[in-house]
Amino acid sequence: MTPDRPAANDPEDPDAPQTPSVAAELEIWTEPVECWPPPGAVPPAEVRYLAVTFGIMGTVAATTAGVLLLYRSAPQLALAEVVLGLAAIIIIAVSGYRRER
Image (tube, rainbow, N blue to C red; front, side, top):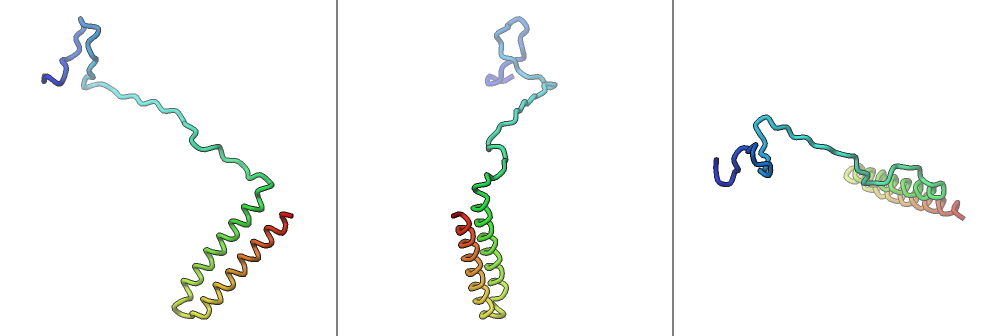
């Protein structure tokens, strides 16, 4: 026994701190916590915004990949890829907002 560690449990003193024995078991209880709102469907009024957003993001990703693949071998084709990508983005954006009216 050391001064910073109490002696074993004293059965005569009910206020003595309970020290675990070698055979002690640790029990941990957990409960599910809801951190994020539950998943749900996109409201019909916002589906158009979602489609336009993902269309533009997909076009940007495809254009970037095309430019990276073509730039060293054919810079003219890489430039054509950028122009084609920008045209596709403009068409997606205009058609998405045109239907909104």
